[in-house]
Image (cartoon, rainbow, N blue to C red; front, side):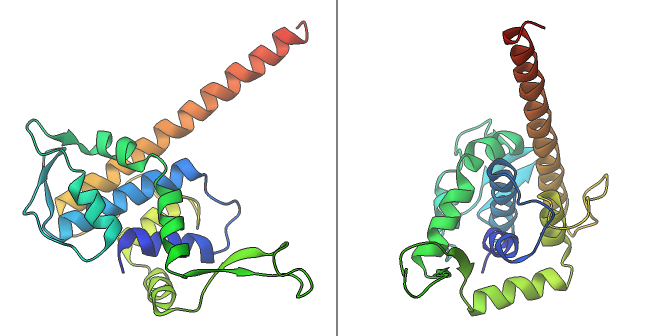
Length: 202
């Protein structure tokens, strides 16, 4: 399994105060992908720029897709730009992939209504077990990404101590992107509230 798959499985499994927004989860998944690409040698970081590595098959369709989408001409792409570009709609893409692989099943509420009601649940698979084992072991990268999307108490001010400067750079960029996304949400909320007040004559 891969870090983004483990993150999505954990997100679907672990109870949280509130489900993460699709935007937050997509940014975190894009960061998880980049970490795995660096670990696989399919990419490397020079400062904050993503330099494609050797072209080879990684073994996961979505990671292969991510690797093929790397910018291959100097000055290359920054980590932050990658997160926003690759992250667009990424949570839905991973959810669709897990569903197609029957990692996710539909739990029906009534046998009389086999197509009505119910909810999506994770199938009991080795992938699910491996992801949850990684989560309960408090592996630093998955643990921090999970905290970043609200699966446990608020993450610390700084990304965790991890092996490799590249991983630390990616986690810091994810943190910045999530903060920017939240700031944008707050700005839009203020603008909408102001519009409502004008509309009501205040």
